[in-house]
Amino acid sequence: MARTPKGEVSIENIDGWIRLRWRYQGQRKTMSLGLRHDPVNLAVAQQRANQIHLDIISGNYDPTLSKYKSDRSQQLQAIGAVDLFKRYSEWKVKQVQIRTLEKYWGLVNWLKEYFGDRAVEEDDAPEFIAYLMENLAPRTAKERLDLLDSAWLWGIEKGLLTDNPWADMRLRNPPQQKRKAFTKDEVQGILKGFAENYYYCHYTDYVRFKLSTGCRTGEANGLRWRHLNENCTVVWFGETHTHGQFKDTKTGKAREVKLSASLSKLLRSRMPAEVDPDSLVFPGPEGGPMTEGNFSKRAWRKVLEAQAVTYRIPYNTRHTFISHALEAGMSPVEVAAITGHNLKTLYENYAGLIKTHPTTPELF
Image (cartoon, rainbow, N blue to C red; front, side, top):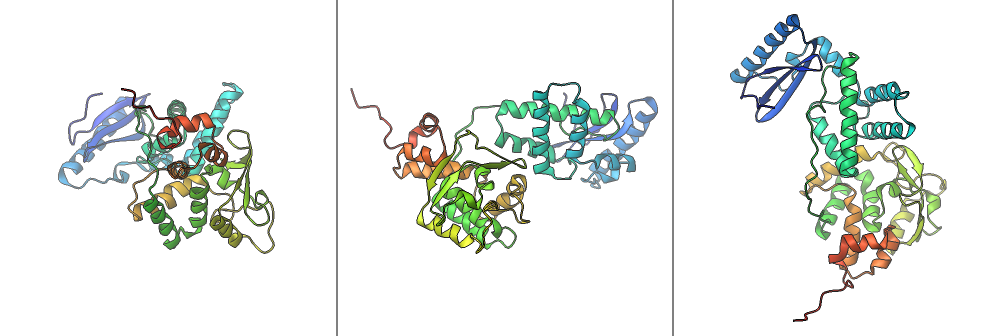
């Protein structure tokens, strides 16, 4: 697709609907008008395009785009991401197999965690795809992007919205350098940042527990008091909470881990006098299970920014624990037993950190 010259606004035909496209401050912008592509509506579109062009060159451009949208288009764009995709999934029920539908319902959960009741705004689409890429394999993320694209095209056809933010997105899978663990100084900064933050101090113990055990996010989210022994010296990992559901661990295997004295003390300090064995050890701020999307997008990102720590996804707490444990000389077998890793996978991914790993001899 040819690049639109600076300030110029192109009028496009997207599946029978009119869309405007232009560039502003080096970024590509698009806006659907909620109008069918026909001669009468094209005249309206040209007037709207002229207005955007004049505003850009005169310095009166409205980056929210509200000035250029009709009341009808604003109203349509307000439909929530979850609501739209649910409607699309219900429409597809009789057209696809059950296993395919499972992908649809799984994507509903990702949308719910990230957007809640919100509609998808222009800048949301690339951030949400990046969020999926952090949590899914590239091939799976590509499949989910295709589903989103189809759902929004269906929504436009049904008159539920006017624009498809996923239309021109492309996923690449270039070679990636291995992620970096947080340094000890960064860990201390993160914990200090949570402890001193008025809004997010609730998560301090939760983050410390993940960093100190290397457990999976779902395992921390699903941890109940009955999973700990009386003195909180041993924890049983056998249940997770992901996408609003309690289920088995990722591998389907349970494990018991003996906790450090400081971590046991922390957990005992959190234990209520009259504890409900089924209640969560680390509930969300409102009492229910943690919502990973909210934690990641709000608390985690903002605390790291405040502490000037280079952003890495929350799951990096697991990688950080494994890296520091191996660098300290801990046996890979012990580390795998604590984290629930397959030992072969641990050797493959952390060979450079394993002090007992064979080294090539100086033969010549």
